[in-house]
Image (cartoon, rainbow, N blue to C red):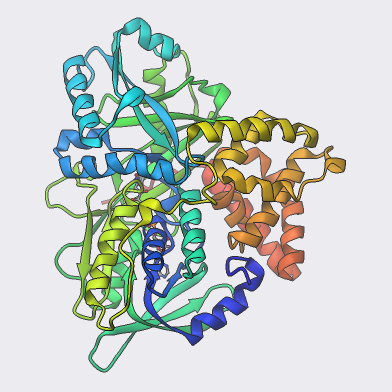
Length: 554
Ligand code: FAD
């Protein structure tokens, strides 16, 4: 039985009920997924419960960079920059198709935050801390070289540029690949399973969870010796339930990104530029789109529905239009968007963008261990640290392996480096032609699935190449329902395929076909199909129509 096949959910639930696990992880974002893989690969028996879909929290709403965080140098976060800077190369090696090198251009403009000297010094320190070598080392460019890299920059006031290496990824796919690999090591991971309460033993120690199956509306008790909460922005909600919310607590900062069709902002390459308020903003080309972000503002609203306000969108458009004066983006050009919450550790007297991105572990008297803060980039080290805490607590002697996730490839591990990824892309491209699919489809498939694309191709048929896009979508759907626990249409359109953000126009023409196929496979009744249709349409409206922020009245 493939435990990540959507059809096998009842059997998975039965097995969750029957065992006592060494560890339950709450939260299927990148942190929880990394923890499940780390713990299972050391030899612990692990269950992971996610109340929504895997990656549905912050881990599908980041800037999608595996980066060292150049700007944190300004805050002297040396340890953080060193750790995540070094992690970049490791995570790239683990999944080279999904974590791809992305050169970043930092334009230097008259009156800007960064002058040439400070940038030269900053990038040098960045390279040294992150151990960057060879062609990845930073370069300082003069004005002409900078304009050649990105002709859309305005020559006026341009002094030159810093050119340095980062990596681009898809956060939700990095999360699901960790979930899949954790499952290969025996972890039982399930989505739409919400931890509602803790079970305590006679000594008052956490010994399991009472969960609600949000698809079957049933209650499930799962027993365990230890519990880690990796619930991101919800960490304090669970600490409160455990009556252990005291001392340090979370501070949530909202970050919005907007997406425009690539032809509206036809960047040749990724740009990291400073706004006139001193904040740094990314503009990143990605296949048929370019995305821009982010904002950084305190947030106290509903954690499950984070509004994208018109003000957020206008802020990003204004900054972009200032940097690229010939572009003139308008609100109507924005095709999609997303808003995520940074679960930061509160520091008195600091603004959202000044607060540290460090992670922190909280241990309660009941034995609940929570981890929050940190970066997508640093997930592997965060997992190592928090699993070490659990291993130290084990009373039973168990022969465990040491942490070795730096040697566990994700997504089949058949592609070893960028060169092999490029070679695979070439040969995939030649084969896709006969299905009516083009270079964009090849790039998309390779970046999303790597060599797992072969299993998607098995579902394509040459006879049906009159509707190539729909064919591809249905083939992906088959694969993701069978191997990636797709349970709702949005799991597919958002977290697995990224279409809600990066290819919104492809959804409506294919929605009926997707709902029919899912309905057949998962035995949905008409009511369920209608609900799914409604939730997809609501999501489209949510990401493409913007609310006006309510002004405080007093
Ligand atoms: P989440 O992804 O939020 O996961 C927590 C999960 O717990 C959620 O899926 C939630 O549904 C689940 N959960 C909560 N309560 C329960 C419960 N009771 N039962 C079961 N499940 C529960 N980092 C980078 O390295 N690079 C970047 O480019 C970058 N850009 C960013 C941009 C923005 C705007 C933001 C907001 C963050 C960015 N980050 C970036 C940081 C990074 O995205 C986060 O550090 C990371 O995604 C946090 O992951 P997480 O797993 O801890 O939290």
